[in-house]
Length: 220
Length: 398
Image (cartoon, rainbow over all chains, first blue to last red; front, side, top):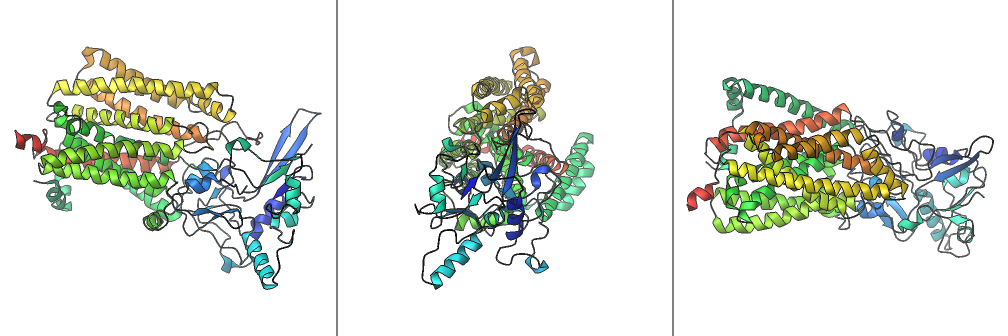
């Protein structure tokens, strides 16, 4: 995924659509840090009046190439999907030790501190393609894995390769500034590959060696 | 009487009728620790049913007091080190404490496991997932495995001593000692291997945990020696334990000193801010008051002056050292998490807000009370009545 920080206007539509698409629990707001957002937009404000500049850092899971959360998990509940290059979470295995949360250098993981409300699929108005959650497990962004799987299935039936831009995660779909791009980084001709190769592209905390697979394009 | 016979012969009715017979101090101990245990068990049960909502932790600070308490408990298993002085290093005078040290090690490791059980979001899965889906790269997996091995060896050593099997005592003693070094440092590695938390990352945490285990081992055995008259057989032995404790506390001070200096000196804000939070930030009161003054300086000063080498002051010094270690663990856990992980997130305060919740605190107090009460019961009705101040093997071989 590539996110163009110049185009982002900080509307946070990506956070909201992600929450709806993935049945993300409402979270518990007894403490500020209890809200669950797979995609969080962090506002950074620099300078003093009148020279103020704002940057909106839209932050999904970075789906690192060398994820430390996967190493930390004692029971392989969080694992690397080698085929797609995604870091995924198996809610059925997670023992809730939270060591992946302590290990993630980007703070993208959330824990269900209480029984989540609004995640029972039988209650309706929820996406039936995404698993419900329960108290005591960790969750995070999946790059809309259900959409990826559906596109793969469709392409397989039609006996063709997935086209560039065919898979559109919820955050990409609702981005009004078209700041987000999603595709196959292994394909040098894909839009994301081309953008990731530009001078403006960078990743966070590169010195740690996690090789995040979400590239940002500098805002200036 | 062997300990397993003793355990199987405990009757609830006897326990209740014993309460009525005891003196005033014992009654006070039973009522206070009994209340704390019941409250702690209720809080733990509530957590198991309702989730971790009542803990003072969130997605930004995922680990809190319970992890610190767990670290404190599993380090307290360092009693095993004191127990090993006789069986491994042939320090004959320590024979007097070996049995009790091993008994305490077993008791504390079990209670420690119960704490981590409550801390897990999905605790009941652990029994299956640990076996069918082990991640051998995970320090937490190794921690569980190593503590299990450790528990087996201590129990084996205890069994050997109880049955006077001389050769087994030596073998199990050495194995338990090695397992102790591995297990204690593995707990440290749970923190030390997290590259995302610069204050923890590195070899310090595993090494610290071994040292803390020695300190807690000596402190706890000294505390017990100061409480129980009959057990306090030899003043030479307690003075020796206190001396070693003072040396270890001074070494630990310099470990902490250099850990903080290297932290503050660093340009990496995540590392320097964490170190500053301990000496001059939100954790500074806990650090200076409990860790340094109560936990380190006073026990050492009390030791240096022979006038204070009495049972009363020995009790004070060891209790302070234990308290200091508890806060060392709390500070250690919080310091790693207190700096917000988002380097880009400049709107947030420099430090996360930290607090203890009632549920967490009561679970920790309940766990401590259960160790105290169970030990006191065994001391009175098992060790004293069976006359175990010197280990059985000693009386048999002599």
